[in-house]
Image 1 (cartoon, rainbow, N blue to C red):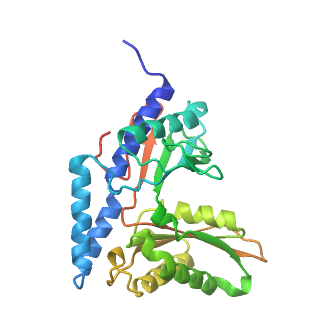
Image 2: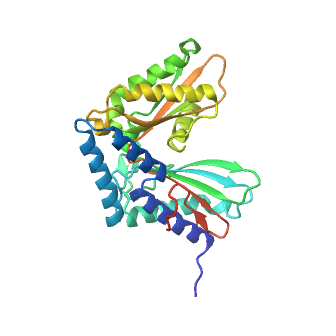
Length: 299
């Protein structure tokens, strides 16, 4: 009997993980949508939430992605320094994307810049995108997978403010972007904000903010207060589910920060649509796993 090599084992596991997350929203997102549905009782909003609920049921029963735009695959890997297969992770993730694209199926979205050619399998230049972090004294691979769709990526941006613009300037930029492009992200959205000293760091932090659990809070009390103020303000603009109007426009606002230069105040913003397909898995050296964003799920 043949035994799969570690790269093949990891690739198969991650491909199954991707396929499952394409059609199943994480537990916290489903819980938040259920809460919001109870609040929305006027206009088109109840009907939109009923459609969302039916969509989730059909995605599960039919084994299909919950949205036809399955995005550009992005991985955020927290690799234990004692994980025994560090050398094969990148190749395994590429193999997994290729397999999941064919079997899930995932829509081929990787278009090569300048050549304007769709590769047909979601594999391309820096695609899938992999963000790396080493965790000391750990033998576990913690892997987040995120589907960066066109609609939820469209409002994303980063910029560097003059320090005198302050945190009010950051809030103003977020509101300008959400009132201009927020409807494209299929609300209710999860809004991620990064604050740092340069635009690329702020942009990365804003995307990592989307990996945080819905309803969680920044450990810094001032940052948590800012999350709440912006969330309340965005809910008051009336985008509502699907952009058809309602009492609630966002699932939440998550802020992540890094120390900044005294002369710069950089901010970035990323959004996730209501079908927020963010999934996290912990993989042990023997390839047993815990799909911690989807409790009880078996791949």
